[in-house]
Amino acid sequence: MANYTCPACRQTFHALDLNAPCIFCNHVLSEFRPAPEFHPGQYDLVSLARAQRWMLRVFPFALLGQVLLFWGPRFVFFRVPSFALFLFPTVVLSITLIMLMTALRRKTDKAFLGAVAMFVPVINVLVLIGLNSQVNILLKEAGLRLTALGVSSRDAQAAMDPSSCRGCGYNLTGNSSGRCPECGRDVRAMQRRARTV
Image (cartoon, rainbow, N blue to C red; front, side, top):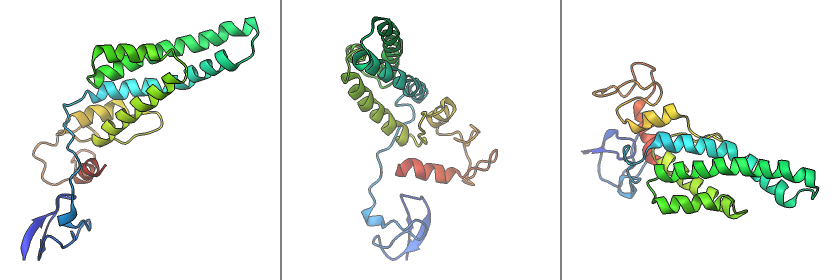
């Protein structure tokens, strides 16, 4: 019997051949396809998380202003507040989009076109949905847990440094126990989640 290390859970076990399932996570070794590796320094995760949080908070107000401006009552005294409700969040969304595009390392001309697209009804929704899905994919690849209000900057900072614990930020360099000595979090489980997401 040979020793095999499962690429999914990183546990070593004895097996007869590569067609045997892992005794810890039940992956068949010959069918395993590793997830694409995420390099922590590849993107500025803190800027991505911060810009996404702003976008998720401001977008409902911009959408409401857009609906009221174009489909609301046609009274003159109602137009001014509707325009203000449309304009201010849309300007913030434009700035947020530029921050997201910069963090994603996109070209400046694309960021400028995206910022201008924020003022075009319906197009702005499509652009933001597409950009948000790209950011979500990157944050998941980094092993971060997504919530309705985005990812916290502290979690994003910890994900950028692979040697620190994502729970408390403790430096785990040289840790062989697989558990953070500061907060007790299972480090191997975090690494498995980051690889399988």
